[in-house]
Image (cartoon, rainbow over all chains, first blue to last red; front, side):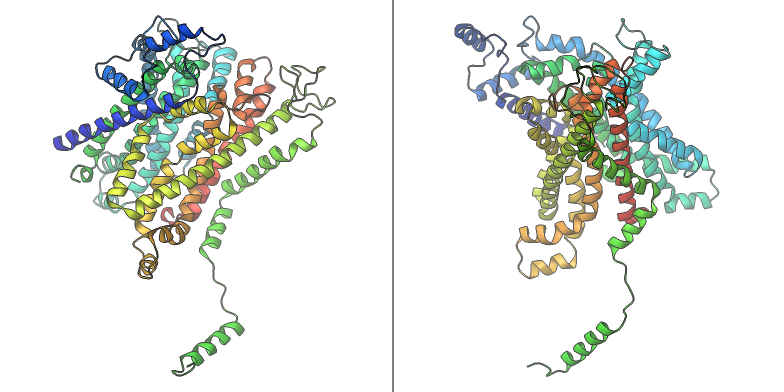
Length: 307
Length: 306
């Protein structure tokens, strides 16, 4: 197990490097630049600005400067928000986005697992049909539409929760955004869990356990849950990435102070530093979660460990 | 040298017999699958709904008194009014909502079609090549897919859209270029088992080149899973497109798409509800039906779950 973990961690490093490189060059090969404003700047000012941000150097040299600074934890300056470094900008928005994303991730995963397992155990009875229908709703209603509907129904008509904004950490402001994020994630998780659970419940070893006279609960707890979790666990990585990107929209609809607002603006304004910094940080988070998921997978499935 | 062993005579006799005899009607695998699909009520209904939506989007505009970009100065922000020909009301600029919904649906469907084709093309080629050659090639190619999986792909779409400007064609291609990962994985898995089959061996023995084997012998045998997964890709692409349009990065005015319509409708949903309800109903029913069709096709074509 230790060897497996070490191998996994080591193999994540080149992936991170490749990802950083890809981001850097895709962004830099795009036409336009951060200083193409409504009003053209005087050539001297422009040249000075470009020199200040090293934009006048050859691209490959800029790349090495950027990576060198990145290794020291320096994301460089923001090119549009003049008074801020990228790290400061990220520090303003990211903790909130992460809080939102991870709370939805945890709630959604738990709800999805329980719903999927319940649905599989009661296959083709009314709780199953209800859950399958709810899951379908969670899957097909896009998050921006769900957000608008939630806002309208629970925020305006019923007035149970605030329809938007964020007043220094009240939980009530988080209920609707988190719900919107939870629904599709829980839906996907439940769908996977239901499918794999039904498959596991049909296997020979579960039948053997049943014929031995084991109770339903013991069969589930000891024999069925662990193998049924496998496909769900491998979905968790992509799932988190969906959630974090989904929060871009949710933050916008509910006027929440996350990183999403800055990211879209930064991409449109070619604020290279901010876009790169945010994307890279997102990637690192997702890579880290994938790593955890892989380790979890190895714990669940011994076959993976000894390959 | 015909007839020297008497084999030809026997075979000719047999062939003649087959021609005159009423051979029992066999059922092909496709017919079997079709029968199962038709028996699946949800999928069958969904097929009709999707066909209706397609007709609605592409033929509907010819039956309306208004076009999607025509401004009716006497009907701005008006609820549905049958006398004026605004069957679903008008928006803040006095444009007919029904015409706009039709145009938006058209755009979403076109995006979905083109992007799905692009993603199927890339996914099938990539997966088949990785699966067929195996070994190091496979390891490297699939590692790349794993890396791509780990990236927050919407961020890439946003960057791509920003790079290419708001050109709808590039939008289609860009989405397609990022949606092929799962397809590649599925195709690779299938290829791994197909390449061990006898007909591939026969082709190899006959001196066929690897590319010929891949595209003449393996790819046609992938049709089932590819069709299933492509059907499931369409709703995802429609979602991605509407997501981008919602953020203001997609289709530009006066053209519109379902996502754009919803993004304009949702802030004013309290006072002008018809601006949100129409596009929302079309989008959700389209996505719901496509998902049901995909599931139905999978149940029909994939014998494992029965």
